[in-house]
Structures are given as structure tokens and as C-alpha cells.
Image (cartoon, rainbow, N blue to C red; front, side, top):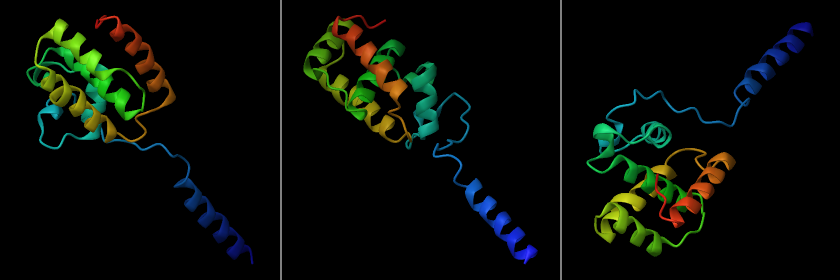
Length: 142
């Protein structure tokens, strides 16, 4: 009887240990080159979203522009409304490029990448995006 009880406790502990967290742990990323891959991994995208798109990972675009695009794409992912045509006009005035570049290579690209990151739209991230959108509406992209 004691063996069955002890075995039951061990089995329950083993099963519950796998249920301890709902947080998805992404693999570790080295910080360079991940944005140049054909299939960008979520951990690479999240790293650059949080630390900046620089060097080869800026993909030939202005690093600041990549950051702005990433927040605008994230807003779409997290269902935060903004006036995209107006924002694209502001981006063209500040950074140049054609509207289609801002729409597809920029905002659309970052929307696709942020959707691949598990639990991307946390409350903290939604708050951060909401605040930054207020600055962007005033053409303050720094």
C-alpha cells in the first residue's frame, strides 16, 4: 500500500512539473545575422525588437526606421489601431522611401515576424506600443 501511495505521489509530481509554466521558452540567440535568414526565427526577431536592428540585421535600411516599422507592425499584431496611411505619409517625409516600401518591406514584414513570437502581445508590450504610437502621430520618431 505504501509503495502505491509513494508511486502515486511521484507520478503526480512528475506530471505537474511539466505544467508549472505557460511561458514558452525560446532558444538562445547570439545576436547577429538572424534577420538575414530566409526563415527568421522568433528568438532572433524578438532579440532585435528588444535590442535594435543594427548592422546586417537592419537589412540595408536605417536602424531607426527599422525600429519604427517594428512598432507599427507590432501594433497590427496586437490589434492596436492607428491611421496607417497617415503614418506612412509621415514616414515618407522623414525617411524617404516609397509608400509600398513602408507598407510591405517595413510594417507588413514586422507584422508577420512579430506574429511568430509566442505571447508577443503582453500587457507591458501593448502599453509600450500605445505610448510610442502617440509620439509617432506627432512625427517624433526618435
